[in-house]
Structure formats: structure tokens, C-alpha cells
Amino acid sequence: MSKSVKLGLVLVAVCVIAGAFVALSAASPKAVQATPVIGAKTVPLTDVLANRKLLASTISYGSPWVNLPAGQTPIDSPLTFKCPTGHTCTVSVEQFANFGNNFTPNSRFGFCSTLDGFGMSQPVCSYQGELLSDGNFIGGSMTQNASGIQPGLHTVQTSVQLDAAAQLGIYSITYRLYTP
Image (cartoon, rainbow, N blue to C red; front, side, top):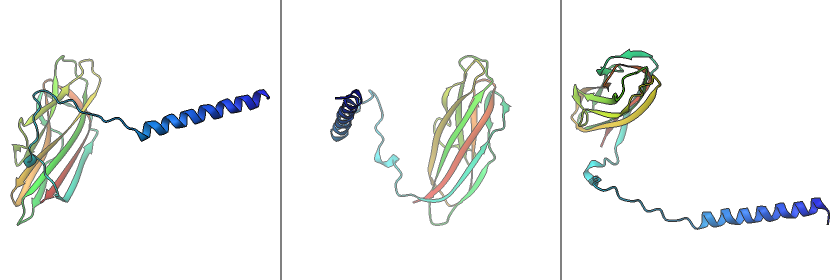
């Protein structure tokens, strides 16, 4: 038998064994059992909003590369929407932003969404992480929701909360309006 024929047979055998291994792995998946987190809150069914109809969505985004002071600062313009008569509404706000040029250790950043001037969730500004103190940029994201909104005109806006001054690099915010 020539060397090329022997090499070919070895390659075929390796392929058959590898194929069998892949097939057996796919055919008998292992059950994954989640380990409960001690003290974790179980979400009651009343906190789950199902079968909502999307009425509108708006995306606010930019790359302003502006310096922001410590404290709470709006990062986009207020958005006005109308909850239709005869319905209550739900607003969902998905936020992402990145921050840098901070040199103060142990400084946090977070998102704050307001509906008609009041916080959409408690705490109003939820910290997402710690700013990097070496000047590099770090990003974070969060979703905030408010339901049971009465018919009429309402305004929603996103701000950031910073423990120390930092630069806002880019941001993207998606606002969604739903009815039951």
C-alpha cells in the first residue's frame, strides 16, 4: 500500500471518529440545572407584561464626545408621546452609553429615565458600573419600564448620573410605547 493511500485511510478514519463524536454530543445534550442565587427575588407574575401592542418606537443616538459634570445630566432631548384614549400605556427605555476621560478612582455611572419629570424606576438613577480611572472608556446598558400610564400627552427623557466628571462618547437610546 502506498503512503498516500495509508494517509488517505487515516484521514477518513479521523473524519468518521470526529463525525461520530459530534453526532453523539448533539444527540445527548446534558441537562443544565441553574444554581439558585441565595436571597434572589422571585419575580411575581404581575411584574411580567405580556401581549402588549407596540404603538411606536423612537431611537435617539449620537456621538457628541462632550464633557459631563458630576451629577445628573440629560443626554438626549425630551420625547413627547401620546397614550391613546381608552387605553393605559407602557413605556420601555433601553439605554446604552460609554464614558471616559475620567481620572477619579471609585467613580460610578448610571442611567436615569424620567417620565413627566419623575423617575421611571426605583432607585431613579441605577448605577451600572464604575468609570475607569485611567481615562479609558467603558460602556453600560440598562432597560427601564413604566406601565399603567394614563391617556394623554407625556414626556420621557434619559439622563446619566456620574460621581465624577467624565466624557460622554457615544449613546443609543430606544424608546418604545405599548398598549395592552
